[in-house]
Image 1 (cartoon, rainbow, N blue to C red):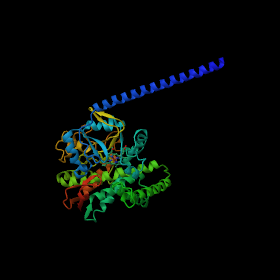
Image 2 (image 1 turned 180 degrees about the vertical axis):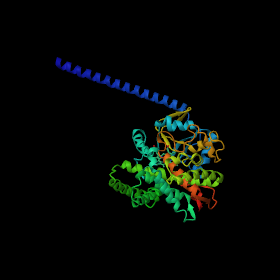
Image 3 (image 1 turned 45 degrees about the vertical axis):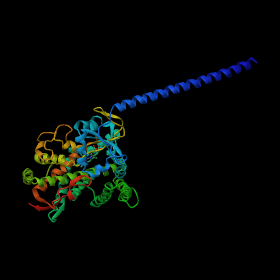
Image 4 (image 1 turned 120 degrees about the vertical axis):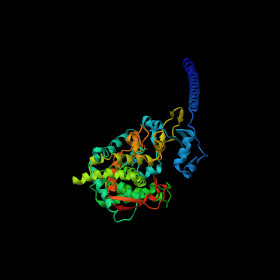
Amino acid sequence: MQIRSSSSSSIFFSFVYADETAQMITITSVVVVLLVVLLQRRLHRKKQKRKLPPGSMGWPYIGETLRLYTENPNSFFATRQNKYGEIFKTHILGCPCVMISSPEAARMVLVSKAHMFKPTYPPSKERMIGPEALFFHQGPYHSTLKRLVQSSFMPSALRPTVSHIELLVLHILSSWTSQKSINTLQHMKRYAFDVAIMSAFGDKEEPTEIEAIKLLYQRLEKGYNSMPLDLPGTLFHKSMKKAEEKKEDYWVYFSAQRIRNATIADNIIGVIFAATDTTASVLTWLLKYLHDHPDLLQEVTREQCGIRQKIKEENRGISWEDTRKMPLTTRVIQETLRAASVLSFTFREAVQDVEYKGYLIPKGWKVLPLFRRIHHSPDFFPEPEKFDPSRFEVAPKPYTFMPFGNGVHSCPGSELAKLEMLILLHHLTTSFRWEVEGGDEGIQYGPFPVPMNGLPIRVTPI
Ligand code: HEM
C-alpha cells in the first residue's frame, strides 16, 4: 500500500514536475521569442535610421533598365551624379544597385572594405568562361590563384617576351603593306589575342594548335556577348554547346601538356578573355587619338625615331630597356586609358550591410564603382574632354586614375598591356601613316566602347 501510495505520489509529483517543466519551457520560449522580436525591431529601426542613398528605383520590376539602354550609358551616369552626388541608388537588370563616383568611395569598395564586397558576374558569363577563373572568386582561393597568375606578368617575367612581342608586331604590320583598307579593331584583336596566347603558352606551341584554340575562342566570344537565352537555336545556346565541347578539347590539350587541373584551363581562358578585347579597344583608341592630333603624332614619332636609330646602330631588336625610355609615348597611353576608359565601371555585391557616410548599402545590393566618371571629373582632370597627355607629367592623385582597377582584384595584366602598346607604337609610328576612312565620328560598344565601325583606316608606309 505504502509502496503504491509512494509510487502514486511519485507519479503525481512527476506529473506536477513535468507540468512545471513544460510551463518553464513555454515561458522561456515566449521570453526568447519576445527578445528576438525586440532585437529585430531595434535592428530594423537602426537600419531605417541609416537611410538608403538618394536616387530613383524607377518602375516596379524593370527599374531604370530601359533608360540605361535607351540613353547613352555615360549620360545616364552623369545626369544622376549631377542630381544626387557621389553615391546614388538605382535599379537595373532586376537588381537594386548603388553607383559610386568618388575616389574615396571607390577606395572603400575596392580596397579598404574589399572583403565586404564580392565580385559578381551574370551566371551566363561564369558558365561560359568556367567557374574556376579567378575573377569570380574572393578570399584565400582568390589570393592563391592571383599570386600564380601575377607571377607570369611581373616585369621580370615579361622582359624575355619583348622580342617575341616584337615579332608579332612585325607580322601584323607586314600584312598592312599589301592592304589598302584596314579595320583597326580587328587587327588589334588579332594582335592582343596572339600576345595573350604567347604569354599563356610560351612561344613553343604549334601554329595548328594555336589556330584551333583561336577558333574555339571566337565561337565562345560570340556567345559571351550575346543575349544569355539558353534555348535551342539561340547564339548563346550554340556557344554554350561549343563551350562544353571546348572543355573536352582543352582537357585533352592540357592533359597532353601534363596540366591536369580544370582550374588552369578556366584561368587560361579567363586571362585570354580579359586580355584581348580590353587591350584591342585601347589600341584602337590610341590610333584614333594620334590620328586626330597630328602634332602629338609628330612628337611621338620623333621620340620613337630616336630609339629606332639607336637600335639600328646596335643591330638588334627592341629591348625592355628601350620601352622604359619612352616618356611621351607612355603619357599618350595613360591619357588614352583615361579618355577612353574602356572599362567604364565594374560590379561588386555587398556581402553584408555596409555604411558609407551615413548611407546604408544593403546586403545583396550591387555596387558599381564608376571609373569613367572619376576619370572624367574636372576636379581631378581639368578640361576632361581635352586629349592632353601632358597632364600625366604629374602623377594623378590616389584613386583618381584606375584604368586597371585597384585593390585585390586589380588587373594582373597591366604591365603586359602597356608593353604591347609601346612595342606596337614604336613600329607603327616609325613605319606608317594612317587616315581614318568613312568619317563616322561615333562610338560603338562591342562590348567595350570603340570608335565607330572599329576604325577603318587607310595606311601608307613611310
Ligand atoms: C588595356 C588593357 C586592359 C585593361 C583596361 C584592363 C582592365 C582591368 C580592370 C579594370 C580589372 C579589374 C576589374 C574589377 O576590379 O572588377 C581587370 C582585371 C583583370 N585583368 Fe585586366 N585589363 C587589361 C588587360 C589585361 C591583360 C593583358 C590581362 C592578362 C594578361 C588581363 C587580365 C586580367 C585578369 C585575370 C583580371 C581579374 C583579376 C582579379 O579578379 O583578381 N587584363 N582588368
